[in-house]
Image (cartoon, rainbow, N blue to C red):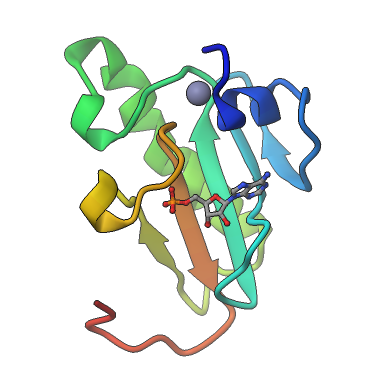
Amino acid sequence: MEDCLFCKISKGEIPSTKVYEDDDFFAFKDIAPVAPVHVLVIPKKHVQSIAALTEADAAVAGKMLFAIQKVASLLGLAEDGYRVIFNTGEKAGQTVRHLHAHILGGKEMAWPGV
Ligand code: AMP
Ligand code: ZN
């Protein structure tokens, strides 16, 4: 999608610190980390958010959990654990309207964290 920051990042049109890429997904370090490890996983296909998913996105939505699992393992988080956050919509703090999972790790995290 034109004028979408994360579409541009996944195409390499805007630089990022890439940590993983396959045919369907791209993962890169968050520019303003809130934990020692903070990586974003995005589908290459433009989908606005979880709220905008349709049946046509079923394959990508399903594969995304496995992409997150793979990236977390690459980051060395599999054993210690990690938190995955999908901010969905304005009130939840979503600022970039391209579906993305935050992977947070490398520290003890409190719960609830809202
Ligand atoms: P959200 O608030 O859930 O929409 O998350 C968007 C995230 O994208 C924030 O954590 C930002 O720090 C991050 N972000 C924004 N621009 C960039 C960028 N150019 N490269 C990496 N991360 C970014
Ligand atoms: Zn996009």
